[in-house]
Image (cartoon, rainbow, N blue to C red; front, side, top):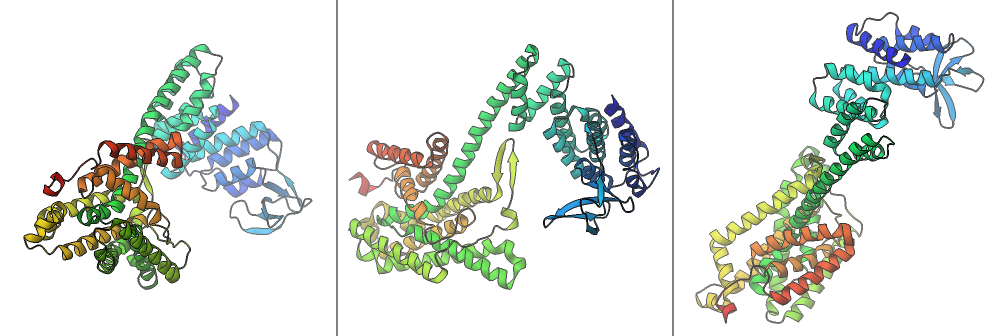
Length: 534
């Protein structure tokens, strides 16, 4: 009752007077050492009623046992540990006064009753703060503490709260406090409904504890609420895994789509494809370093600048690989595989020689930093924009293949190389441009991967096997197959990981693909043409 009366008194003072000060805060702080605990309780109430922004700091220091009265002049100071010694500072301004020895001051003591008074006063001060952020933080603290003594303060604060987010947090805090109180069962049922609507891990913990209550009716209601929260959380968990699968699938598609083109047109198993992805990532690093040195204000545009450069760098290296190595080995898949593997080692060592073997820092622009939530799904902005980017690259590449002369020639060579050559198509140049296009897209994938993975000479090695799995599963040379294969394998992998672990999930995925291609050797979307039909 005493704390209830104190809370109501504080709230009434805050609601009616606001800044009307009976005494300045300095004078009230000076009165803390005088008298006994009842006198100190009256001073605490007066400090809370003062409306001074510094009052919360004074009360927090008092509750923590950090306030002392100097024996020399009776002045109240705050003792803070610095570099192994206690230093006296002004509790209102924080200005350092000097060292505080054990015999220099006497601690201002508080008992459990005063601590409850201070907690109620702090709750009233922060819940009624004019700053919405402070009110939201206060509601979060009350929820975490689940203090029944704050229910009255919360009721008064809710009566005047207009911010929807703060109001929701206060209602959650009140529900947690009610569950820890001796309030009637009907009120606790309402609190259970509120916690079920919140549905997070903290609410689940409160409901689980209430389900063990000796009160059978309360335990039954809490158990039903706990089961509902777990059911909803399981559904949100499935949705979260689906998002992780889409996110991984977008990365796999970017890494594999260029390989699908070159593999489909030329039948070349390019083991250096991962290094082309790595070159795109290092191009992003170089661009960002140049922007940091010359024009830091353009950093948010660094990826837009890096994208065309990464496409050109990786594309040029791809054309050089095709002209210098692959065109001499067509029809000899084993030699091509060994030769491109050697090229991949050369590219890795070249990057190590230029940039060093350590990981390089590639930053996120402001618009790719942070995260947002949809229900209980946490979505990071960098993963979200990579998914959008991957779909945009897919759509653009599809338009190039369907709507341009180059795309028509590429499709002709893919379906029947001899017939295309007899119709005047320069298949050697189509091979070079196709290889360059696939390599350029690998460079774009490197730009995206630089935002979510470590940029190092080994970056591409982590994606080359997955890229081949996507191409084989989806169908060689088919863009829609690469899209379906990437997202299917990404989702399956993320659903397997919680149960089997990352390594075993990858093994199971590989076994699945081996079994799948036994039944469908051409993949999900097999290309059709005269050469295939024969």
